[in-house]
Length: 164
Image (cartoon, rainbow, N blue to C red; front, side, top):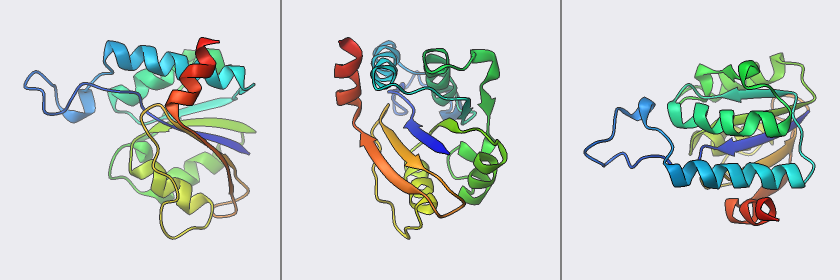
């Protein structure tokens, strides 16, 4: 399975006195636009997915909603996965990914959990990546720890592609 692992876009600063609780922090207007451009960069690279899984946190669900349709999935088909929320078990996320049976899946979540998940999927004991907001790692996954890391796309590069 081809797995695209995307960190959510730029969200409202958690230290802003007007910020809601962490699960309810939204993307900023700039964060939404940057995420949209990053997704368009993926589209320019020929990325299409069959399934979108997201953390239940608002900034992740907004990122997934921005990404879904351009990548080939109806927004109404986005699946929320509690295991992608911060401080959840990587094992639960691995199980959910494998259970879907899709040939290509987009995961949207948070750092550092996504970096730990990527490490687990490629059989590493320590994170190999440090995804930036709206950054994407691409993996070829063949079992719970038999994956290969194929690429890591910095959001700046994806946005440049998306503007073309």
